[in-house]
Amino acid sequence: MRLVATGLLVLMAAVFLAARHFQNLHPAIGFLRAFSEAAMVGGLADWFAVTALFRHPLHLPIPHTAIIPRNKDRIAETLASFLRDNFLIPSVVARRMQRVDVARAAGRWLADPGEGRGRLRAGIGRLAATILESLDQERLGGMAKRVLADRLRALEIAPLLGRALAAAMAEDRHRPLLDGIVGWAAKVLEANEHLVRAMVHERSGAVMRWTGLDETLANKIIDGLHKLITAMAEDPAHPLRAKAEEGLAKLAQDLQQDAARRAQVEAFKNELLDNPALADWWMGIWESGRAALLRIARNPDAMLKGEFAAAMRQLGETLQNDARLAETINRFVRRAAVGAASDYGDGIVRLVSDTIRGWDAQTVTGRLENAVGRDLQYIRINGTLVGGLVGVAIHAVDTLL
Image 1 (cartoon, rainbow, N blue to C red):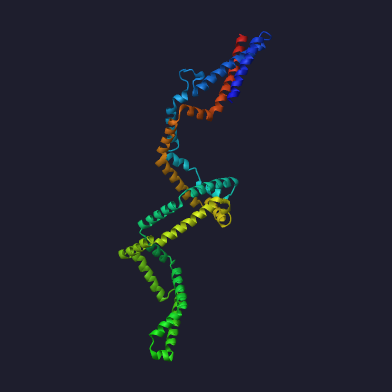
Image 2 (cartoon, rainbow, N blue to C red):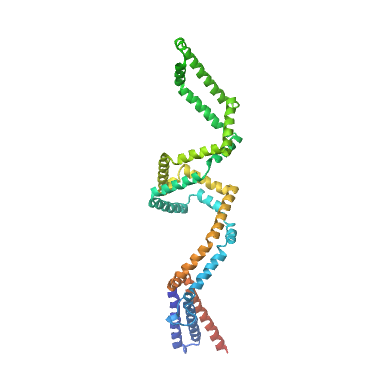
């Protein structure tokens, strides 16, 4: 565009010279000379104005030229103030975020595996794989283990377990647990009938053994236990089940209010966390998880096939159709954005201001000129043409008078 604008100015100069040489051949050539002469004046004036923004024209220290390099620091401060006043004030961010529907946009992105999404997914996958491979896995896994262990140590789990158990009993969600215990007891009894028979045989006298009454007694005991377990399984109101429920209710209360029981739970928790076997198990889980993440990152298209893909599409449809969930997510995003503006807005403004101040004058000039240079060259072209038309108008008025 600079070449076009300069070429047009050179063309006007050539037309002017030609018109000046042949102006006596016809009166109309005078209009052509007036056009080209005024066009040169307009083009040169706008060239001077455009150049004066970024540098000294012809390297001459003319006053009020090289405006942008001389005012670099003021531009940095003005731009930083513009960002702060129009983008990074919490109230402004909150107002702008009111119009942003992040949840439904994410829902559409998840529900529609389009071409753009594939490129984005591949790029994110490569980045995630690079990060996972570059990190020290033992240190990272150990750090994650320590963070998790520290959080668990700081968390008193006994009251949480007590409240969870009490809530489950209030909604009868503990019944499957009792059913499972009864079923487990039936299997244990069936698998250990020989132990019951051996115990009865050992504790029976010689007469009972000689007469075989020990075997009969053992059978009676086993049959009685089977009938008791069957009755408990079939009758939700069985007295023993009621006793078990009383025990669970007492346990829930003790977990919340009994200091000794809470201390026992905490001691068991800390002993479990200090167990080397748990550390080995955690590192195995961590390595398996990391390997799975690497497989996903390296082949994101395969990840989004089958059940996982269906789950992602279902999540996307839910985000688009569930107004309450979408509003909850949007509210969370708005609060996060407002919080980020409040916490980091001043830092972002200082970063922009200090970065521009740190640029040398040539860098500032080059970047701004590249951003708006095309339009500035159109100013030169328009100045050349408009100047020429003004010159024609003046020449016409002079000819008529």
